[in-house]
Image (tube, rainbow, N blue to C red):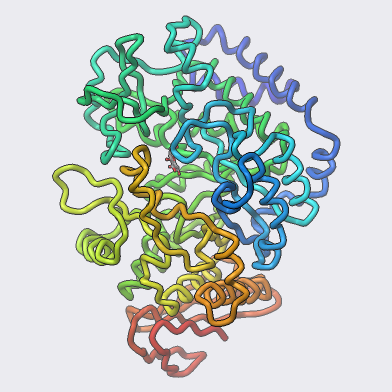
Length: 562
Ligand code: GLC
């Protein structure tokens, strides 16, 4: 414990320099908190920790899948969604999935669970804390790991701290950041410009404004409430907030969660005059969270949700002392650019620059929108226009700009159901390296669902277009030969099985020049085998000249591996 105290002291001192004389007391408080949670960890989880290899999440076997518990079992009665999920573990075993990310499942007021009301209680619409723990332990027994969101940047305005602050409680008021004017800060971008512009939410009882990056009840410039909940950012300049959130994290860790997705992590620290994104203090906070987690749940890992420029994104790995995994948000639009515009160079550049010590989740789709803002403007514009023409929806449309920053749509709808393109996208996801991630319904060719537009709360948030119930009917159609679901599901299932037969595919690719701007060429190698891959991302056949393979001709969207 003395060692832990020596580790935490400099981190706290960096974050709270003005409280120098309090650092000793704070580091004692930290050690005490860790102690408490270590004592609470169950014997079963301690045994699991012991049996789990340190780098389990880097295994070539790991294939991840992200879902909403309610949408995955729409027919199950309210309160029994987690139980229903447990009864469908065979679905994941069959497809070859062994890591399930269940989107937010704690008691919440909105934003599809990301406005958390209570960090210690499962949403009663989904099930009970006990049902979740049974699900986790059954998954663990079957070799499936579980990921959960840790929403650490903000709480819902119905969460206890927020309610107390709203009532001017002197202890909780400084858990948040306040303003008397609500004026936006110049350099800070709007994250949800479409329906929650600005940075402050009006709090009527106090006649003040509170900092809010995401959903706001009443944004600056509005005279009435837009929503019946808000997400209030936490003020990490107050150490009580940090300790409160460490306590929440460790409580969840003791439920047996394997991966914590750190939601909206770049926004944790605010400072006037800056963009308030990925400030240095965010990284100090991460080191403290990491130290806490590894002290209690030594095999649990962090996944960064940081939709940032690549160089900034890399900072989240620190010196091996921050997150273990990040979404490869830079690669994501490049994958789309490849299969829809036949341009592969950017994939090669970014992956060549991806350092060896980093580990990534490779995704083409998530529950959020597809951001194209990192692409060159002309191509971003062309792709956006074609996706909008296919019935996909704009997201993050800034007033005065001609096209939105993001597009909401399912993979099927974005690609207009072209199985050749989706197959290529999956082949790339499964072969480029690290851990592939699939979003619920991707495997069944689920189409956009415009029903959200009828819901007064959700209608402005186009991301709901792709939050579609996977009914029994839909899932069962995967057994019916000739159905779209059969075709898509079995295509993916076969590809996952191919990936698992070739463990070297988890490695970082070694690219070679194909002399053709639409054909990506790379090799994978381990002690057992070497694989050469050519991926033709254009809609025309292409001939390439590769010394080891001669001059093969690839059909449109053909993926060749030898
Ligand atoms: C993350 C989530 C998104 C949510 C936001 C606020 O970006 O992925 O769904 O709306 O954070 O929590």
